[in-house]
Structure formats: C-alpha cells, structure tokens
Length: 103
Image (cartoon, rainbow, N blue to C red; front, side):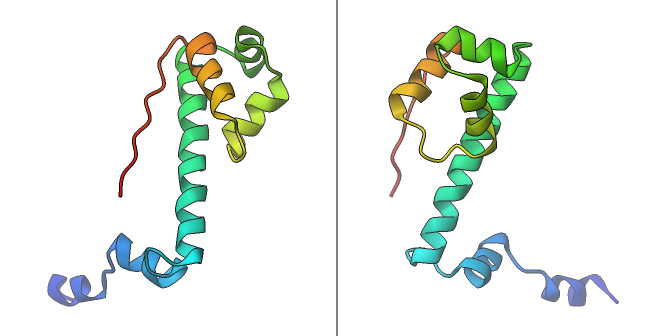
C-alpha cells in the first residue's frame, strides 16, 4: 500500500468525534465535551500535586478537605464546587486559578 492510499483511510480527530458523539451542539457531543473537561481538570490537579511531592492526604490537609474528596476530583472531577477548586489550587497547591470562556 502506498502512503497516498493510506492517507485516504485516515480520519481527523474532529471527524472521529463527530462520528462517535455527534456534531458540536448536539446533546451527546456536549456531554462528551463536558466530561472531557472534567477529566482534564482531574489530571491537572493530580499532576500538580505529584510535582509538589504531595500525597492526596497531604493536599487534603493543606486545603481543609478529605483524601477521599481529592481522589474523587482526580478521578472524576464532576460536581466540584468552584470555591473548593479555588481553595485546592490556592491553599493546597500554592497557585492561582484562571478561567476563560470560549464560544
């Protein structure tokens, strides 16, 4: 097989998402996008925690929450309160949270 015929079989990531979850704006695609953002948030918290050499229990103690709650955020950040997230970032990780809105 030559590379030209192989390239014709490639699908862009955007096209893959359209096929799997529907076009942007559909309920299924919006649900996917939201879940992906919460996943990224959990991974970000976990990476920052590990970079600082903190255990989940240590991070929880620094920001006044529980190890279980930190674990839940890192594994499925859905339903986290903004005030709690800000406290974890500020008090637990020594950072600042910046939000942006895109359309």
